[in-house]
Structures are given as structure tokens and as C-alpha cells.
Image 1 (cartoon, rainbow, N blue to C red):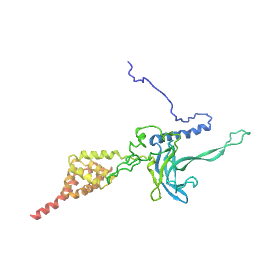
Image 2: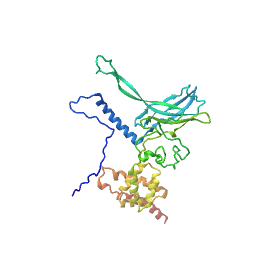
Image 3: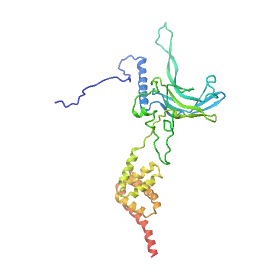
Image 4: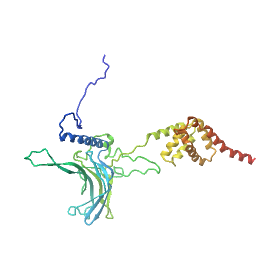
Length: 364
């Protein structure tokens, strides 16, 4: 009886990625060496395109002003990804302006601003493998990436961007106001037509009816004249793809562990909730770790000590206790016998109760 789980069908194919391989004694041509560059570039293109799609990664804010018959458009430094997966880097603030013969800012009321990649051949070198009868030719030995800021009267057909918002519920709407103090992730709406393919896991990148190969430019903003005659930028039409940093999952685990440990004393959990409103998450992590290292006996003594203080001061004193004994519990160079704080906490509790007892005897 055959117990192996063999496939009952298959289909094979080849990827478009191709690596160069060399062996001893091979005569290499320039195509072989160029393949080293081509593979790494194709790989990075594929990953960037698949992870993020096209759009603005950071910066590239747009502003405009009419001056002497020109519309002066300023684009701040930043980074974008073309639909091909190639980065388009603008290292410093760049200014573009309209042509007087093609555009009159006093008669036209809107423009679209796009960022497009360019390339420049640098350091040309004469080829040496040519016959005596042929003229020597030269090829560039460096290729430098560049960019071009383009200004259009109408929205360009093949440019990566988001559809303009139709109302406050459509894409590009301002994010809802969050309660003060909450640090919520402002992620893109999965139902937004600009990002739905990303959330659906759809591969590839298209700009409307254009293919990924034709879609090389990135839409930055839509500029329009307001009632006061000033040019205002609307950035809702750009596709923003900056990766979102996720929260540390261990923090949630620490909170769950604390809730479990303090289930017998909900009041202590309430103290930690109040403390979290006043301290950073990093500090709270240290407090939770210190509390988790306390034994049941030590926690009981801490809770009894806190009861000796007025209710409004207990959170502050809990913080002082955790700060004071944090290193004694968690520092690596402390001897095991010195990590038991029962006697120290008992002495602190007795010291706190002594003035109250003396005051009671005086009253009698």
C-alpha cells in the first residue's frame, strides 16, 4: 500500500525574474554583467509594486501662486513610487511654472500636477570592440534617475492617483475626529475605490484604462482658484502609500496578563488604568513588568499599604512603589534571596500605620 501523498495533477511555468550565473572559464559579455543589475532591479520593482502599488510615500506637498502671467507651482521634497515599482525621488523643493502662450492663470481656474520619472545618460565611454573601418561609438556608463513636474489643464489619463471625492463619504474625505488622547491608526478605508484592490490582494497596478507599463506618472494634487482669487491645492486626488507602523502586540499581552493577575483585586487594575492616562506606554510596560514580578504576598502588602493613603493619592504611591522596587525585582545582577521584598513591604506598611495608631492613643 502506497502511503505517500503524491500530487494527482500539476501545472508548471516560468517567472519573469532571471538571475545571472557564471562558471569557470566562461567568456562574459556585457549582457551577462548587465543581468546582475537587471535582476535586483526587477526584484525590487516586483516587491514594491506588490506591497504598496503606486503613489506618494512621503512629502511632495503642492502649492501654487499666480505671478506675472505664470502659475508658479512649488513641490516639496519627497518620494513616490511609479506603477512600475520604480522610486521617483525629489531631493529638494522644486518649482515649475506654466507657459504664458499655453496657459493664462487669469482665465483658467484649475490645473493638475503630476510627477513623472526621467533618466539621463552620464559618463559616456567609447567602445573598444569596433573594427578599423567602423566609426567608434560611445555608450553611457552611468544612468541617473531624474524627475519632471508636469502641469496639465485636465486630469492626465495615465497617472497614478485617486478619484476625486464626490462628497464627505467618498474617498479623500477628512478622517473622523478622534477623542483626545486616543492614538488610533488612520488606515485607508478598504471600501475606498483607491485602495480596494490593495485590500483585496489584487496583483498589478493600473491607472484607469492604462496598463502598468503606460502608467509612469504619479498624480500629486489638483489646484483650483478660490473665491478670493488664490490657488488652493487639493491633495485628496493623490494616492498615499506610506507604510503604517503597527503597535507592539506584546503590550496587549502584558495588559491581558495584568488583568488576569489583578482579577482578585479590581481596584488595582483601576489604579493601572488611571496611571496609563498619565504615563507613556513605555513607562506603563515597565510598571506592568514590575507588578507581574511581585508575589501574591507582596501584592497583598502593597494593596494594604495603599489603603493607608487618601483615595486620590493611591495611584501616585503605587507608581512610587513600582519605581522603587523595579530594579530589585527585574535587574539581572540581584541575588535571588534579595528579590523577596516581603519584609521591606511589611516594614513600610507598619511604618505607615504607626502614626495613625499614635494619633488614636493621643486622642484617648
